[in-house]
Structure formats: C-alpha cells, structure tokens
Image 1 (cartoon, rainbow, N blue to C red):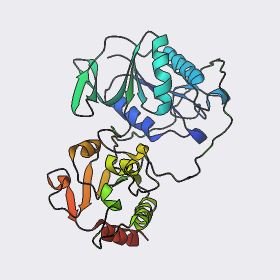
Image 2 (image 1 turned 180 degrees about the horizontal axis):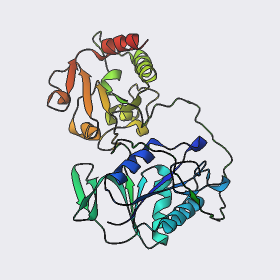
Image 3 (image 1 turned 180 degrees about the vertical axis):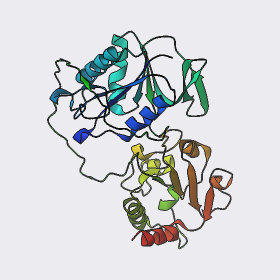
Image 4 (image 1 turned 60 degrees about the vertical axis):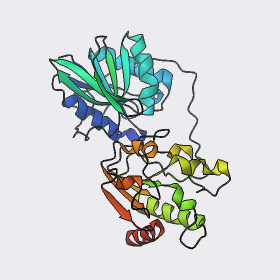
Length: 324
C-alpha cells in the first residue's frame, strides 16, 4: 500500500482541532505506514513526526500555508495525503497539490482499501447519491469531512523533524474583528443541533404571535445546552415577505437542501414540518427528535426517531427550567 501522510494544522494556542484527530483515525483504519505532518503555532511539540512552525505559519494565510503543505508532502514522500476539511486546509491544499503535480478531492466521508488500493467515498447531488472512487495520480490529497470518524487517541511524537520553509507573503495579520452581536450560535462541534422552524413566528393557540418570547426560549436553550442553532429556509426568508422574524437567524443558519448538512450526534427540530428539502440536511444527524403540534407532519413519516406532539413553547419552557 502507498505511504500515507496525515497533514494537519494547529489552532490558537498550539492545540489540535478535533477534525485533525478524526483524520488520524481515518488513516489508521487503512493500515500500512502512516506519518504525521503538522504546521502552525506549536507544531513542534504536537503529534507530528514532521513539523513546520514559526511566527509566519501561526496565522492562516494562503501563501504560507500552501508552502508549508508542499514542504511536508515532499519531505514525507507519501503518495496519499489525508487532511481535515477545515477552511484553512480547503484554501491551501489545492494549490499545494497542483505544485506537486497531484490531485485533490474534498468533502470525503470515508476511506477504505480494496485489493490494496485506497478508495474514497463522498456524497453527490445534494447528499442523495454516495459514490466511491480511486485515483491513479500521485500525490492524491483527500480532505476528510469533519464528523465522519471518531477521534483517535494521539500522543506526542517520539522524534520530530522540523523543516525550514522560507516564504514571502504580502498578507499581514493585524488582529481579529468580531461582529457586534458577539454571540456564537453556530457550533460545529456541539453535541446537539437545535433547529427552529417557521411555526415559531406564526399565530399560536391564542391567535397572536409571540416572536419575542420565541426568541428568548430558543436562545435560552442554545445557551443552556451549549447547542448549535439552525433554521429552515422558510424561517430565514420570511423577513423578505414582510413577516416577523427571529433577529438572530441568518442564511448561515440554514439547514437543508439549500443550506448546510451538519453532523451533530443529536438533533431537535421544533415547529418544523419535516419535509424533504429541509430534512435532507439532517442526513448525518444520528438521533433525530422533533416537536410539532401536527401528528401527521413529515417528521412522523419515518424521518424522526421520536416525535413529540406538543406545543413547542410549553416544551421549551420546561426544558429551559430543567437546564436551570
């Protein structure tokens, strides 16, 4: 089997992202010789047997990241390169692969071997068709989708070879600027995904809308459970139709056919109908629960593990009380 390089980067403080350990687990599942290359802040004392570190590589920049990746791939002599599909890797690795005459594939959800050859699997056509393929070109760079593997146990490498990489860059890091809202509601590593549907902003049992209370209940749960927040397309688009909306939702929160496809372990849908365009975004959520007043909604047709036929306002009030 071809030699495999696990290529990862550190984050602020020299820590490794969870996706890096998932990629290591993917490489270990293939068997054969596996080496690890790390670049970024604190790369030297990390799990890599090859490392590129220094102030120039502490921040994410295309010029420095691509140069570091190219140097690590060359030094490893690996024909197969596995890397986590983070924004930093997705930006830098295609350029590094092109410089080395290789190819790159993104959003891969599984790797395996067949007759000694490495094969990769990924979803096509909005996550409706799964395809498995292999490539003859080398190096073959494969970006592993976060959440596809359980993280591996990793220990510092016994011996580290530090590579000297010199590269110039016109990009200068001057600091971070956070949005005025300041609240993090999209958490890819959260255990639970909470999805708000359009029913939250419509008339309730008393014939009135209660959008401010809905916003308070939803954010109370997101904060208390430390969950990630999503929404259906209809709820996101209601503002353009002149209807009341939840102020903290944007198109970045959109889950489904025209939104994101998260990989949280658990998902709770509230006031959603569970129709196909929305539910397709739940394909990789392992445990699905929904709260809806309609016992015949789409969630009841085999799309949810548990459906609570109840008033979402009452359910969330009780959940928030239990969360304290």
